[in-house]
Image (cartoon, rainbow, N blue to C red; front, top):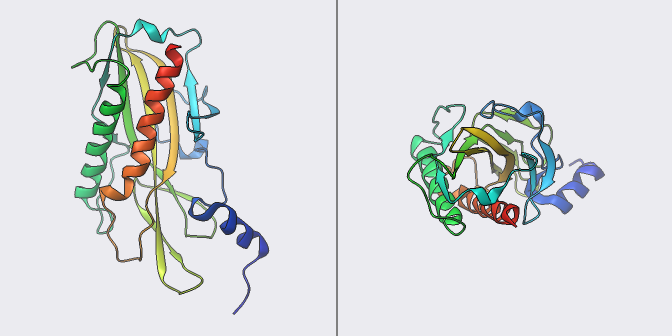
Length: 222
């Protein structure tokens, strides 16, 4: 059996399932959900995660007295598969809605819709990056699909899951975009190529995204 190249060994040892490429979403991975990507910059979330972000210069976060979280979208619209059935896709968006509302409710009362002094959060689960585990290259594929990879130790085909999100933050009084964020994250690793992905495999990622978004708003108010 041939030995793996040293670079691959070092990469796997240091970053595990997250891969050897940048954790930032590359321009070619943008889904088109947001209206303008040109001003996005590489930033760190409150918990140190890699995000592409833009905040309108001079925006006063204290002008908002409530928050409306729109139902999250799957964008572009995916086709369910045996590996990622419609039940999983629905579960992901439903859970994303719940955790976003839970986290933002800690900052301001939740509104029932847009309006004066309302910050509108418009989230989407978008196209994702997927890779054959431990190998190159990445490729952009439809939302929430998984890519098979070979376990060098056992020969069993393991599965990595990954998701990406894009969100716009909008002034509910005039529909002006005041902030945007794009980021990706690794979901739970599936045991083998026959295991079906469920919404539970994405919950840790969604929890982290929601906490970071709410925390960023809190910091902006200060």
